[in-house]
Length: 216
Image (cartoon, rainbow, N blue to C red):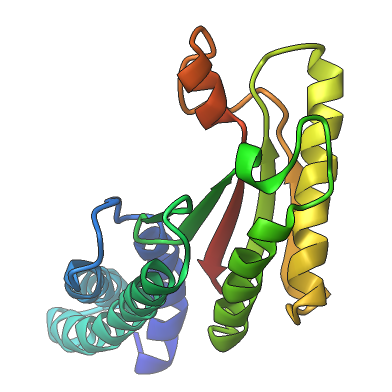
């Protein structure tokens, strides 16, 4: 097999790379190192699979490891850097998780909105404008804005409310300069809780909007 075919194999391997890491600790550069190591391993494997002879497999493995290492390190480094910047710039009420394949920025709905309202509060506008600036600096990403509720009240009402609130946050980000084609809003209602709805504290955690930033 020729070197020309290796990129096709690496493309398939990179799909595995993008979803392979998982951790939520503050950034210490480990995701960059892990991404590089994992990319190199997947690249080497792609080269081995693509070889027709033992010599060709060895050569392809070395080339694939080099290319894959660069791909993995690039993804991990960009996420690490963006995570660090957002932690320094955004308020303490904002949750930021770098899980290795994307950044999840979580804003509590009790901070974003008044009860039953879909108008983003003035206090949250600053955080969203900061986030929009970061999204624009890291332009090779796609953004999903996902609204969530607790299970209080009618499920269909909660679903509709989550959609409208996600759209409100999306509109703020677009007004702050994020290109509309890079972002979409999604309502999940009460079907994706992160805590028990049996307690007030759990319900409060479940009322949230997540902005998921994924490298392209």
